[in-house]
Length: 228
Image (cartoon, rainbow, N blue to C red; front, top):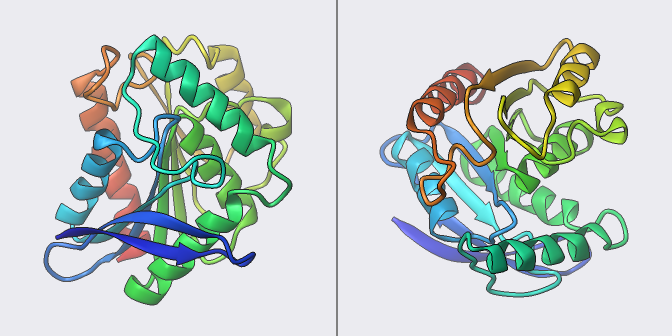
């Protein structure tokens, strides 16, 4: 069962969250953080997949502070629109959208106990920041987090277990940066896939089924002992 709910951040801002209820006994909650394309069909499908595994899945709109009801595809025009919206959110005064993610985590804790977070591209970057800054998150999994290999992000210190997925043919995240990140973060479990940026998204030409399946298997294995 899925539905849209509204949550309220500490500053009083109200934002929508796609919620997929767990199938069977609830193991915990997973917050799914969108790419630059909004809470679109792909992100909803990812949330549904975690619900099928027994997790309460929550996908908040991280664009809502700058533009409501964003749902983009993957054309060049959509990519340009998403990049512009991301820039607007990143320019918000701190804590910006992190307070929306905290409110989502708090809801997950209240409803299902322990909470993990997973994010893709920009959502991966936000997930990394959450792992280093927010409270009540038990585990985090960033996929090809755009910006994670920049010096300011590498300097952060995660407070919780982190599993990071990167792609060896990712033109936006050079392998040299992944190597520096891995060396600087010895406690982060890092995996590199023979794939391109966006390999998990079956709506994109970059989709790589074997890499996506392996990363999902590793993610579920990572979450299981931490969230259950």
